[in-house]
Length: 227
Image (cartoon, rainbow, N blue to C red):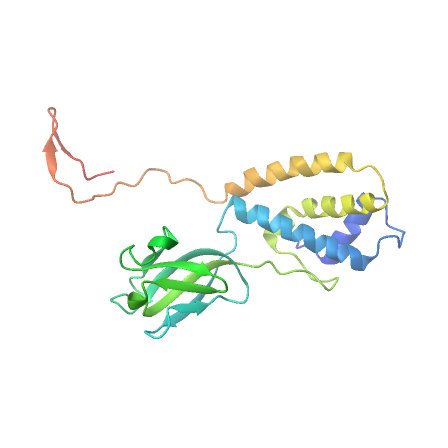
């Protein structure tokens, strides 16, 4: 799939709004409108399926501090693994769960974490030491130069961006936008449905053994620990 450039998006938006040969709306203004639409589309994709965009960062906490600064491009939290210290290793990472309740932050077992302001905090403090791998959704990169491109996921649904920018042009010119708005509503529904299906469902439900004892159920032996 060809990636769409800022120039592609501006040109397509002007064509849709019949504003190809006018300076009433400048390319500088349209660049801002394009980036606003990029942000909106990015949010729709991420909200439909969390794992379209996944970045990671590794950090180590010591006994003197149970907080780590978030990556500069941090947008949304995905998960945290303990990969070193307290018996963990890169071969056997341990999932650290989020706080169930901030009020109970020191009474939730071995380790939990949460995002506080611009930092990731592991509780309780006395158990926070170790090396961690933090998974997160990064911020989307905005466009500035005309040759800058949006990525494959955004390019797949680039029409959403074009429609939103064309609507902004028509709005500024005080022209009717109803047909384009209807197209945005329809396309938004398509994006939200299609984006959810990036990963297929498992072919069968996995069977797990919890270690519960076998029992006689009147017709044969069974194990209540399987689910």
